[in-house]
Image 1 (cartoon, protein in one colour):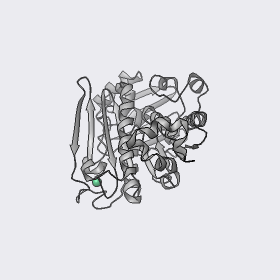
Image 2 (tube, rainbow, N blue to C red; image 1 turned 90 degrees about the vertical axis):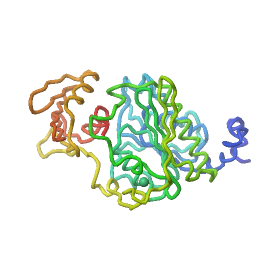
Image 3 (tube, rainbow, N blue to C red; image 1 turned 180 degrees about the horizontal axis):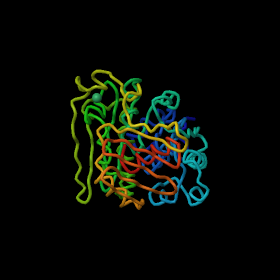
Length: 341
Ligand SMILES: [Zn+2]
């Protein structure tokens, strides 16, 4: 009996565009990178579609600040600080025991991405920072795996299908990650949570069309939607751009570890540092960090931010030093949450 004729899949099978590709979903290994608001919604939907295998990738633990908008997590997960991947895997198994959930607690980087995404047929973006998105974009184009990008912040969303050889890629649209602190982040400026589901719907619709074989160069576009007037824009791209450094010229700077803001542990114990290409606008960083409730001090040379025993010193040159912990992952989390890199 084909899986899609089971009662649990009957409503899905009767919607023709989904029913036609349900067997393909159920044979697929899908990866969700980042299990926040976007990734959590994707993980739930993919679980209910009955995908064969679900790779769950995230570096964080569940916190109380996640409960307002991240559908997977409960008060118990937050109280006991569960790794997001373990909390997600437990929910996936409870909802659909036919799905093989694989929790991968890791900070996705150029050294581990090939191992983490090994076997993934389709890659979904639930990330909160552009350095990791550009890494995924490089990986997708280099290996030929389709990548469905999304981002939600404030009342705005963006979604794009990156199907190597068919559509353009993120770097066709953006030269590189926006300068540190210049792009809004959820931690700094919040979001309207229901938009997460809208972004997920668009990601999954594009993925259905990819599985049906009907996604073409005409779908090479960056979709965006903005509240309060629900303005939908479709920025069309002419397929892969010959002068794109990634899909045109096949230079994979993020995958090769030549680009991307990566925090590194310092020789001195208890500190880590990062250098952000393009420098830092300290006025803007100060606004974002103040709005997020960090303790701040400012002088002519740098901005110092403090929270929970950690101290970050930010310089206009783009250098960021973390004291109180030598954990580079913690520094990357700070950079992603507040500066969007
Ligand atoms: Zn490109």
